[in-house]
Image 1 (cartoon, rainbow, N blue to C red):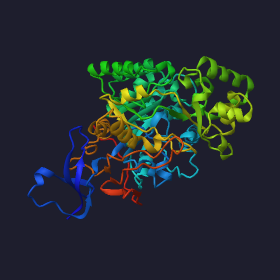
Image 2 (image 1 turned 30 degrees about the horizontal axis):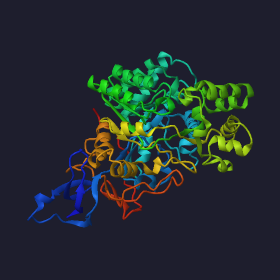
Image 3 (image 1 turned 135 degrees about the horizontal axis):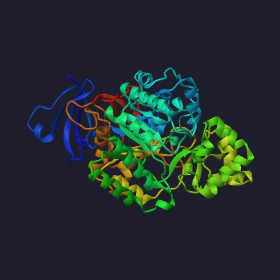
Image 4 (image 1 turned 135 degrees about the vertical axis):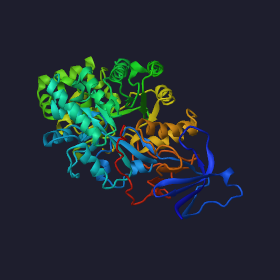
Length: 536
């Protein structure tokens, strides 16, 4: 007898084709039989050790989160309902050019401090790895959902060059090439960059192109957070497209938004740029989250010159009154590159999390509101937080445009990514709500996508980008990473007021054929493992 038969499911198989009714049989972590209703008429129906009545539910492949920041959360939180309850069965980590491998002892401590706002400092994590293979082996001990990893270019640069704004020497570039190659050999699926974050932002186009040539030689892809999402957004997208084409490297554009007032209504310009490149033979995909506000750290808004040298040097500059005044001018008047070339509007910057609980009263307030409580300027409050919270403050930026969000998600190269930061008292609700929001709000309520189209965006398209030959579709022989949801009720519970509320309408989620969500509740199953690059 097989392990499980899911009876009378409405199968949306991830291909974009029309749904169909079927019994789906699982065994040994794979889909072993699909018996369509018409084919089953008059025949004995398949049996199994266990049966699940899926009447009224859609069965689809598990969702793939193409942009996740769960690098430490998967290790510290075995439950991980933030993603499991959404139907996510695979996350892609190592995003935005900064993560925890490859490192040495020095770089590890620097990176931990630099991205405290994303993942916490990690006092509750045993950092018993230093290279990519070691990190993937650590994931293989058992996690809630599967995870793939991108070699973070900023971390590689920190390890080889440091945090300085300078060109890499030929010897340093050669070492970076070797580290990227080693990470891909050990199972990474590609390379990420954070080109508004230090030290990745200090890499010139020629350096990035050379690293992308290495990525391409291993069949990986390049995933940049490019140099601007604001005043220079289109130019930044064009730079990445040209770079990837020069390196002959597949390109996946991270959280491909068109934000800030200067880009209102300009999504068609971005999509035209991508369509021209695709028509010319470029291999391009992108991901977005289905919300307008963005989320980052408060320190990320600083100009790049103020961030040179790493966290210690940032804090030293902020402590110096003259240098702090120069930083303020760049932020509020000139428009710093950290804030995408747009002068910061403190009314749009909401404090979403702090590392030090002493600043908890600021959470949920804009910087201007917090400044009003303190009776001082917005910059004085921002500077106070940056220094006293040791760069651990996270913020929401309310700078998006709904028409851009909808236009981009319709594109043929689009996939879904939460960009979910799980730390902080009031994280962005996308961390807990991205996938049910696509299905509930943008499919059922607005009709921006059909159900079949949307599921393809969240399953087979990302699986194809990751070059996974047996995931992303409901097919015989494929991995039994599956989600069952009610198309009439699926919805995010998470809101900006209650960002950690779990979704509704997703009663069952399976990873490797085992229930991680059953009857709407998290089980104790840890079926997730590292998903390594498929060799060329």
